[in-house]
Amino acid sequence: MSTTELEWFKSSYSGDGGDNCLEVAAQPHAVLVRDSKDPHVGRLTLTPTAWAAFTAHLSAS
Image (cartoon, rainbow, N blue to C red; front, side, top):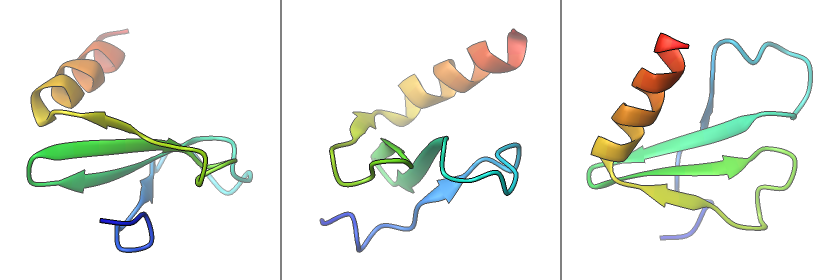
């Protein structure tokens, strides 16, 4: 699947201040993360379990 077929989202906390944030595309068996400044360089693929642990850790901080 190419990155053009994915639906990428930014956090609602990102605001309208440009493209200096992460974008996420959720799939049934993976959560993809990329840098909005350079979306074609690559992406990180996480399991939904790993993504949930990551976001839970951020929420607790």
